[in-house]
Image 1: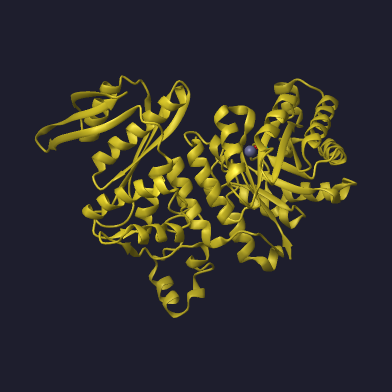
Image 2: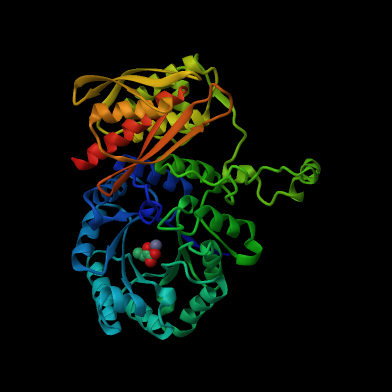
Length: 502
Ligand code: KIV
Ligand code: ZN
């Protein structure tokens, strides 16, 4: 049985999804969860892309134990040096460098010859090797690269010291039989292929990223690059949970497995949705809300008699349990902290105290507190940013024959400002009041409300995607009152934009 390495790029390629940008605190929480999930490598960012990416890679490298921490770098000297600076203090570190190899990219985008691309790739692998041993190289747009040239590049970068060579289907163009054959051709033609791990990195433009990755495993690939919930550039990347569960469920076919602790899949998926504000479609394989919901009478009948009639994966295998009431208003700080630890939510003392205060307030409004409520409360701790703006109080009036009106009092840079606004609904009135108090010019790209658990007293969670000068962020807010949750989410988004301007 082979062990296939899981290289998670949620924090790098996943973050390239429109609106999915994360701050350092959010990335750190997610990286800790990825370590609990058991991924082998975390691609924590693209060090040269921004100071925020650089900082996130360094912080994760210093605080997250277990996986190898990797930074992406173009095949350029300044990128490789910056990537090294970002990962150098991590106990386990990798530099992942890449250069396009397809004629389309070389001719129209980079305007260099095949020879020049090959030379730069080799030189940059050698440069990275001067800093550390664990170097990965990707020939970008490999699936549209002429196969003999691709073999030449792969052989040369292995010769230069690359320990992993990743074959990206950058534009999600390949189909499984073709991609499998390409991996096989590399194994047949590249003389030194046994000196490196062959990885694959598939995009989902034709909905084939998981199938292509699995076809590659059947043909010898030893590492899969993927993201939680399949988020990523355009239609996304290969979804971690799909590829891992396919191998786990069909070991008879793949004769391969991974180090993933599948019981952590549901929690990882929820955390990514919470942080990025990107909900999972209900019918998504493995982590969709309906993935284990059986509606048909014939199926329900079969399941009652014997689960395996219609269930190929037990929900517990991916950490999906029936929602249980866990804490209430009489629960103390100790029980609160114990439950957070059991959920794998690691917080410092100050953060626990602040989350506990909010838990007590929530327990006054809502009798029964579930794990999902706790996850939401805690996620508010790490989505927090310095508060340029904060809500002091608000009152709303609206009704069938009444013009919706919001009166808001806010603190703006320590000054209290009050405004009244009208809108075509209470949320519209609140957002107008916030915009007029803060004088901000961001555009609201998305507004989404979700009930965390069942019942009309459920905690409502709101996500607002905002955009300003090309920068997009997602603001989060949770409250039993969805208008208050909306105000909190909008203000959280404005604070994130303010922090990024600074
Ligand atoms: O899709 C791609 O080709 C990439 C590379 C940087 C590996 O993300
Ligand atoms: Zn990619």
